[in-house]
View: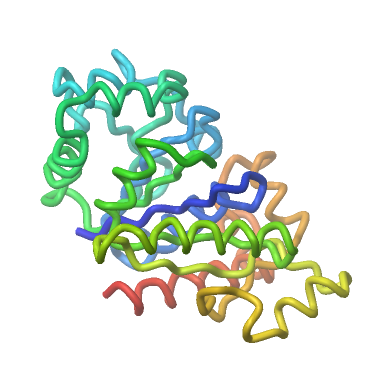
Length: 247
């Protein structure tokens, strides 16, 4: 089972849309797929029409008083399940910090799902703290949506610098350009500069599009309601690249 964390320290970069569409594509290609909505905002849960609540909250999962399998909910799509968000996750750093051997606990909880799933996508909150440190050590890959702007590039540099200090235990980092607006000269320049990012990006680029914004209206992944759109094709390409990288 592969664990893929969709993460960025910067908010508003298309992280949840990435998680939802990549997980949908993985399931459509036949992988038994789970999304764990770890963001207390619960956007991924909203897209799948699942109430953002876990009985007893995130703390019960971490303290082994509840089973992750019991909290998982099905979606409208074959092969795709969801572990919904819970507002208690806003205290995730405090919960993890108070948990004995949190890395081992999270890894054990995820490993208990190996017989059920081929891939788990983690929709991470845009923050860095104790919980992020643990997730970095259990994920196989870190998928990082990056808008082609100066601030987003600087954030990716900070992430790289932080992971460099993990002494060989850091996950593979897979950045890609997100919300690309070809009308903007800065976007075109950064996308064209092969040295713009501190880590070589994936080739797929997700365009800025109202189609992606309509996910909230349709409460569905882009390919469900706009299968022939540029974003749908871009997310499919991105999913294939990630699958090729992590096996």
